Amino acid sequence: NAGVTQTPKFRILKIGQSMTLQCTQDMNHNYMYWYRQDPGMGLKLIYYSVGAGITDKGEVPNGYNVSRSTTEDFPLRLELAAPSQTSVYFCATQSTGNGNQPQHFGDGTRLSIL
Amino acid sequence: DAKTTQPTSMDCAEGRAANLPCNHSTISGNEYVYWYRQIHSQGPQYIIHGLKNNETNEMASLIITEDRKSSTLILPHATLRDTAVYYCIVRVKTGTASKLTFGTGTRLQVTL
Image 1 (cartoon, each protein chain N blue to C red):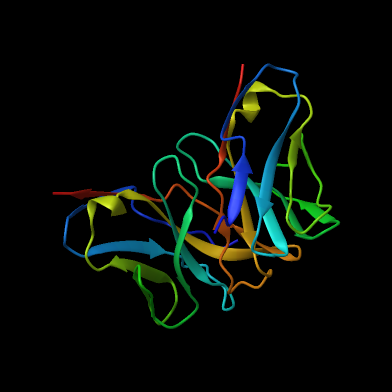
Image 2 (tube, each protein chain N blue to C red):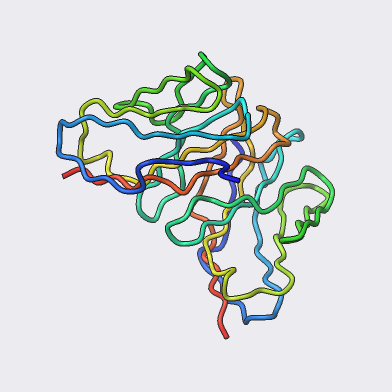
């Protein structure tokens, strides 16, 4: 019963490098979200998707890109890593956009950029 | 966006009820109140949500005041494993989806 799976769990990048954070779900949920959490702070929405082929920006999209080619996968890409992107990244899913449906989170990817 | 206010921290003795308050005085009529918790280093865990009526599930109870301006999450018999940061969130719409706006939450420490 996997739910939401994020890989890798930890990563250290050098400034200017690029990488893709993976998120996959087996709940057949249409809605998927990427959040980041800085130390001692709440989560901030980066991007979200309401279904395959459809994505939109959240509060803090700069420096990131996403794609949604399948229902299961919603990768987050950092093109030119910067120290300000050091954070914990969480992926979440939701069955519909209905306010009565909870979001389900993965365990996160801890990213450090040096 | 409706904003929530929670105490920064609370303590609770193991086995006792933990009552976590939340103010959301600007909540709109169709916005749900959600509670999540985050145990150190893990992803946020859904606890419970409600609109107007009180709700109960296997984890907790949610009491919403009649004017909907505040709510209380009740963990009936707190254990050490309930030590976590608890977030009270009002669900807001972002385009076609619903965004969860996380504040800094209440750090609940359950002690022996």
